[in-house]
Image (cartoon, rainbow, N blue to C red; front, side, top):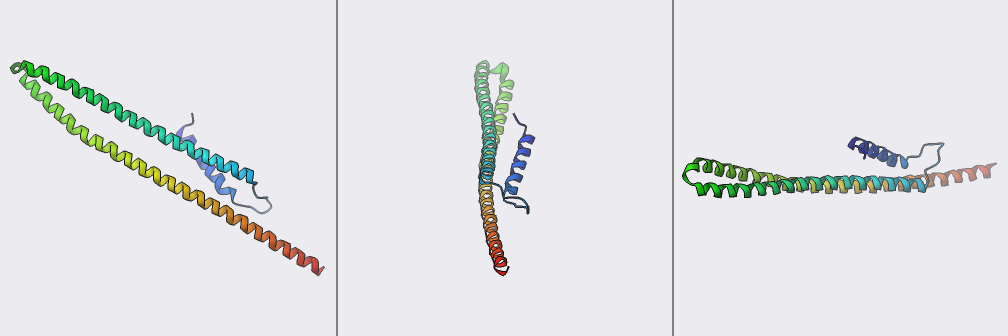
Length: 172
């Protein structure tokens, strides 16, 4: 499996290829539609792989949070059982009971901000993902527009060259 650095480098290389696909240097022929389509498919595949990686990591974090919440709930149940056993002992263990109750209250107070933090981070993730998708869509549209403009410019130049060539032929 590729490391995050390798994925990033592949993504940068792919982005450079897409950027260069619309550029035409003199003395070179423009790239064929097949090559452009292949590059677009490759860029799309790379984007989908990144999306899947993000989704996989999101699920991992969610699973970890759920696992932690399950352990906390189990710990809470065990502590409640312990509290009941201690309550049955009454006097000899009164100090320990008070200590455990305070500890449980502390843990409960700590759980609330953790849950809120998880929800906040999930919202932030969704917002960041939406922003990423919007920018990527905008980039794709801009690249398409650039390719259209370059093609149109090339067509107009070729037409002008043909007209000039005909003009020269009529002179000679």
